[in-house]
Length: 106
Image: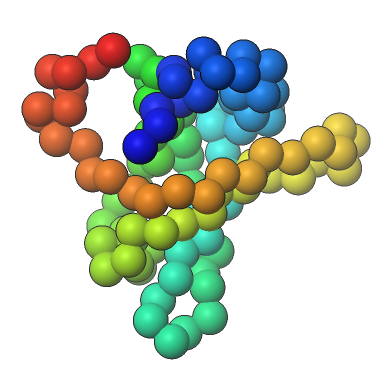
């Protein structure tokens, strides 16, 4: 797994642009795409943040969280702004934070 901090170290301009696009408003907003067995992919609006060099999504118990618990693959896309036609898209697997991960901050 590559953290946001490692990504930033390898290519500083790309993550900086991604962070700017995710944080166009007051909060980090994105669309989360998940898969559910044989069903079509689902798209959900969520809140995201880069904290201590890691990208976090804030997901309450819901269908989208259940999707990720069953199959951790996802796609994340910043909301599109027609006034500033740039985009960021991330494909990865979800890892649920633990207290141990919190203690291992970079």
